[in-house]
Amino acid sequence: MTTSSATPSTNTDHTATKVTDMDIDSLAHCTNYLNLQDITNLSISCKYLNRVAYSDSVWLRLFRERWSHLEPYIISQSTGLREVYLARYRDLQQYKFVDPLFRCVYMGAKTSNLLFSKNSIFSTQGPLIRILSIDGYLERTAPIVSLNGHSARITSMRLFPLKETWLFRNETHINENVLVTSSCDHSIRLWWKGRCQRAFRGHNGPVTVLSDKLLGDENGKVFASGGEDSTVRLWSLSSSGKRGQKSLKATLYGHEKPIALMSVTGHSASLIVSMSTDSKVRVWDASISSSDRNSSCVGTTSVPGVPVGIKCHDSLIYIAAGSTIEAVDLRTMTTAFRTSTNQGKLYSFGLMPSKFLACTGGLDRLFILYISVIIIFRRLYNSFTP
Picture: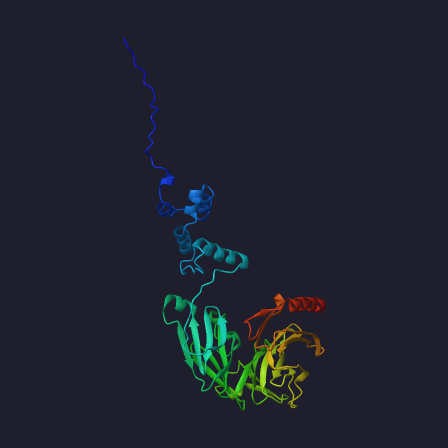
């Protein structure tokens, strides 16, 4: 009797397809279900799969998944989509801001007086107000609204809380703002719900600037305006009279040239600083009521150079003029410090005192950050803090 024993086959199929036999494009297509971490792991497994993980098709898919509203921008032919993805991802992580949305909007004419509020961007074109709704722009539904009421160029725009005006009726509107504009047509207009609610009249020439904040306490708030008639005027927002003239609470005299700049002080809600085109600075107390039209002025100083910008913070007023930035202590009206930008004539000025940041704009570049100024701001602020 013969027996047969089954032995396992030792034959090897040498025709089987290996992963490395597939071309890179085919393998890249197979990565559609892999996330960024999976792709990273794939890239360190072997040289061939590293080429797959670095292919443009893989990173184009990852880019579109993370930023669906954007198309990758390749700077040069030597830059791959992986570098573009990682550069954008790195920038977002380093600066710790919400992923920005980049869009170009054609406004059709020269635009000035930019103002940002929540999901809206306010700008002016001559006497016209343009309001761009960011949500409307993204949804492609009438993104730009135009407001027409002034008859000459708009010089300044400000947003003030609706609750401080006579228009406030109930709590549903407590977080809304009204838009206030000044113009060369000698008027100031208050806008809400897409139309002009009131025109303030009283200046004897173009109105050049508005205060950056409201003055006063809970008993009533006012805003200030300056004009080419060299006056500072205070206007009530709570007056319910139908004529803007009834809202005029005071006219402050003392400047000899047109008013160029204004800023409400940080340490007192009743003080406002004005600066005229001759670089003379005056501090006014809006709470002083007197028949003497000059008695409201509680401090004066002057700086060299053409006025560029001013900003109050606590008891200091920071003034950019000519090619210098100067800080003045409003309690003594003496110069706390002065620093030169060494960049020639200044054209714009911005300040974030709480962050110890100062930015200036000149002809050679858009913004310049001066670390020396920041250090001085920090030391100065600490020395005045009790």
